[in-house]
Length: 483
Ligand SMILES: Nc1ncnc2c1ncn2[C@@H]1O[C@H](COP(=O)(O)OP(=O)(O)OP(=O)(O)O)[C@@H](O)[C@H]1O
Image (tube, rainbow, N blue to C red):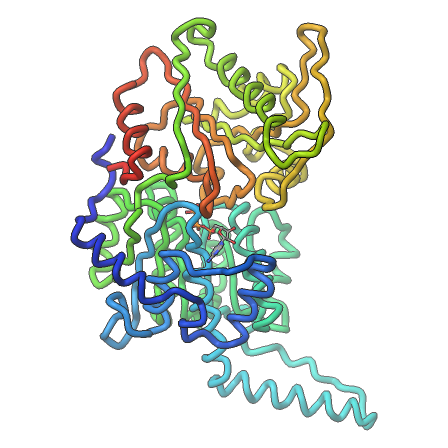
């Protein structure tokens, strides 16, 4: 299992640490003032003393072409791999430089400038009251985005789309989402609006099928970003992802792949397809965030006797009961805890969610069959940074009718939840022991995001490799990479 990841030497790690010390503030990056304003006032609104994270310190200067050991010296297309731990701010590491470049290119684009001039002239005439404007010319960027961001799920399209929208208030660009959650009319409107579009965030399925019928959609792309590249270049996604990459590459200036892990398959694929790709890896790559601890429940022992469902329900009840001990709570209040339960197989998601519901737990399955609205509402409560509390309620004494009102549970496979910024999650239950270290990293990475504390609980059965779990636990305790 440990062999699935590629090594990074200690020497390289210490060189990277030195590099990170050169940039301590976002103000040191050559970003347009509007981009910085959007970052401080809208994207990270309300945060004080904001500093770039390690991946942002390494990637932003390199993508902007500022002096750094990762800045390519050649002309032509630049290719990057950004690999950094889960929840470490990779989105902004690629989005800020892409939006900066978009605005610079816009200022130099003769078609856009000529369009703007005609538009302003018509508006001025209208203001003078001379004529009613008949200006209905489509914007030159209509269905021709400059920045394309690919992600593996509709939920991630929403998440990244929200960050881009926030940034666009100060920076003034148009960003649109394309995903299977939207109906055909909305998708058409988002892409073919006569007002134009600068940034598209999409799943590969949707964009690949649009590009099949209208290849020009990808003809002006200058920044192509493959987020969650370990998923998007794996066996199931690679044909769709590469079909988009192949169509877009002729115009692309910056090609950015982004991932929390570099499995051997991705390593080999990128080395053969993109031999000049600059790899930006943080010193803590492949380590689970330090503030996440791992506990183990041996379900083969009493009282569970291999009943994993019961062990999961019990663990969730314990998490719920502990929430009243949290300091800072008003008297009579409890925290609302958000718990993610991971299973290995898609087929187990629904039955486990139903079992937990039968035990009075507010659980949903994260998959296509769960009503979209219910899923969205539950996910929203998992991704908020705001604390959530409720009045304490006594559990009913009558046996068999227990209810746990202060815990919300999502049961998922990690593919369905990959990359989701579950800021509210402190507890992750690994119902199945993950098949690989990569899965351990992604699943535990839903807790402990951006320096928060978290706890993982593995349910270990009779046949599970307890030595592997012990090794992962030890590496996590030491803050080491799980390789
Ligand atoms: N410099 C910063 N300071 C504080 N918070 C930040 C900073 N940069 C990003 N964040 C916040 O950190 C959280 C995690 O960021 P993000 O989702 O980009 O992580 P990620 O590295 O892409 O994770 P994953 O690998 O799981 O996809 C977000 O809520 C984001 O707003």
